[in-house]
Amino acid sequence: MSRRHTQDDAARVPRTRPATAGHHRERSGTEPATARSPLRLRLVLGVAGLLVFLLGTALFALWAGAVTQRDVPDPTQLTVLAVICGVLSLLAAVDLVVVLLRLARERAGRPRRR
Image 1 (cartoon, rainbow, N blue to C red):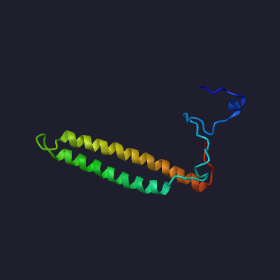
Image 2: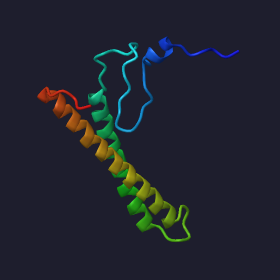
Image 3: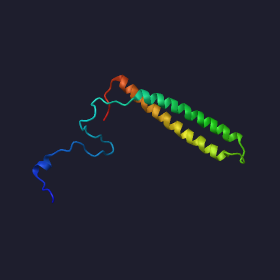
Image 4: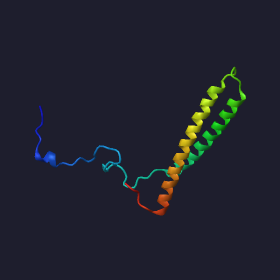
């Protein structure tokens, strides 16, 4: 049994619209109007992650240089681990820059762009 469309159906505006690139969803009314991201926690975790992954990069690179091809793990495996740690430290550094920019924007009191 299909329902017939009426003029009331056409006049209704959806509470939310599908998220597309560059567009934010409209508020549905259930989330807080002043919700904010925990930037200080992201800053602490970002610094800790950056330090851990930089240390891992250095240690794996040094270890890879000190072992021979017959050792376990071999230099190739250790180099791969060093590269992975390097990429993760780069991501942590980018996240730190984003967090610092957002914190500076909040301190300046400028409204957020949408």
